[in-house]
Amino acid sequence: MAKINHDRLFKELLTTFFVEFIELFFPEMIEYLEADSIQFVDKEIFTDVTAGERREADLLVKCRFQGREAFFLIHLEHQSKREIDFARRMFFYFARLTEKFALPVYPIALFSYDKPKTQEKSQFSVNFPDRKVVEFNYAVIQLNRLNWRDYLTQDNPIAGALMAKMGIESKDRVTAKKECLRMIARLKLDSARTHLYRRIC
Image 1 (cartoon, rainbow, N blue to C red):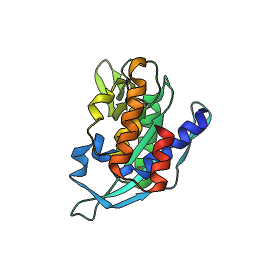
Image 2: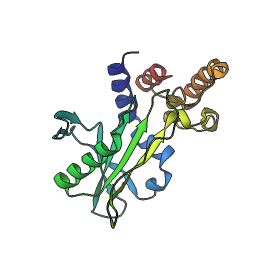
Image 3: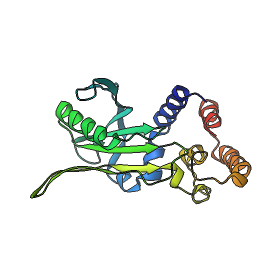
Image 4: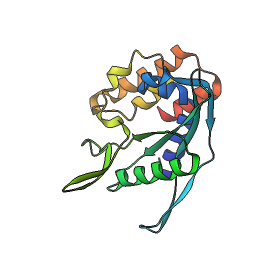
């Protein structure tokens, strides 16, 4: 599958099953997020002055805290290949989004590439010998470091859809595919969501 289709498919998946994604990977957030308040914000385009490039944030979601008239943003960035300077870019986005919206930003990075399997960074920092100026932390979900078997019993469509990009040994790929299809039947999704699910699996 071509990269552009892969990225577009993942964005469609995450938009369609956004609440399920948060429920699966960030159960603590569900305790304070008002699910009915979710709004997808138009894509933000930034100019990286140092690199001379124009980039856009993948997914930006505005949410309300439960029981409060206060909002926050979830910035979800999907990466289908490793990028050396990714941590700096996440900080760059965080700073620009905070400046523009004046809201708290919860940053998440989702890595879906097959290799390498070395642990991705989850922090960007600026340090001097006498002072730590910046310590920016973001959440990381690196699919190739997750065990697909740990998600078999989840009644969550995002779990089954993302299993295909988790750490699956060659001898287990047929089994994993079958389990993914079984999960579709068990969840009884509507036809549109089932079609999207099958394209990922």
